[in-house]
Length: 616
Image (cartoon, rainbow, N blue to C red):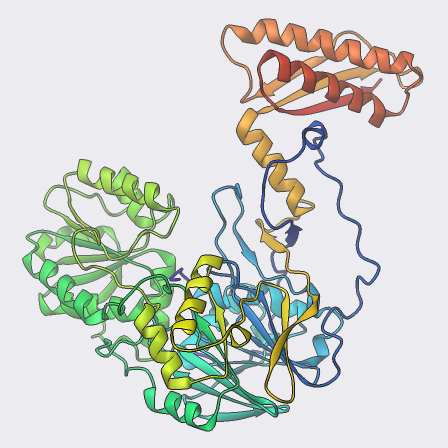
């Protein structure tokens, strides 16, 4: 996955510590809820906490080796994997997941770490494979909750981590450690080494954890690119050495396990971009992921070759390029790269190249605003060549198509990966995965980083090279795999909680499922509020209630339906009062039920009903 994200300096002791975003729990998916849930605008009641809440939630084994995912094993994103050695915990990645289409207004989701509650002091390290947000994006939320354990990663990865923490003023409390490839680091009872792999961001690593019970290799996100741009290829030799020495289990990327053959090399993409920039008569606008630093460097180099000035649009793009320049991943003359500004209009069109965010059709990103004509500094015009160097992530196709259409209407020539080789994945295809298994030759295969059908395809690849069922382990989030002294493995009967944890702005919006349920009801059928005035003592009504609706009734029907709503709600209130109901909650419930039945019969709709009683 290639979402956006962010030199590791000594910890800045004394920095103020900001509050991280609040997070909420929800059930695994948002499905259809029973109608009685809709009658209550507060949504379903919160689930009671289990009796053991607040107590250690992990496996009961005091010794031995076990592993378990807290995210990333049922989705692409939210990656978090735990290796437990004699009760000590080693966490690999704590990433975020971007929301599904039905998660209205949600920013993103992060791993559920409630299973580690009470054992924070046993966390020896957090190990990061690379700098993409689906692997580091939850640091500012979870490091405080995990009591700031030591963090380890390669140079660029830790620079990205530090940037996330800087934004929340948490760097001063964090213990960030930069490691070199192949160095072995003793952490508690294990030795850890980072091995170079090829992905779509520099400094990506596989991680080998050498435990007293055997070696666990976590591939991170990888592919085998024999002609990568601006960095060495994967460390085939060391991976094979580990295989010779014996590997107990490999936790391996499954994202493209359904795709035959080998993934395309970044060199092919670079040549296509070179040709397009060479042939363009006017300005060139290129949109890509801000974390694809290897590709961004190639774009900059090609632009320099044709005497074009480079202009950057998008905050994440500016931040990542600055970090890459500071670490030497992007080497360009001073002054070649600038932010977009009005002065670029004074340059000849053939001397302008703009790199922007927005390759996924995001409404607020630079490319979408250029297409709409609302960008402050860039007005797309006839003669411009716009290049989308990306593939739409699943679910973003319509948003991307809308941006492409808007750019065409502006007169631009638009090039996408649908017609030219403008993007390649950072995840290996079937032959890449098979090569990894042939090199490492682990005793057990644990497919990770993928939806269930991707992991199932990965397991099929394992079967094709002779792995038996008891050596292939398709885990779900929260499931525990325990290893015995003889090297065999089995799933534990214990399972950790692995709910979806929602990040929704900076303020608390209550219980997560309730918030999403309310938003879904309002988006489908609108909301109606009925305001009653009643005497404080007798609870008798003073006049007719007022009605306010949004997204429910408009036009010619509004007057008649409003009148019927007033009659129905007033009748329901008075009947409940005559039955002896005096509690405000009971009176409101009677009104809600009556109006629910009314709208179901009258409009076949299920709006959110909010009765309000004001005592006078």
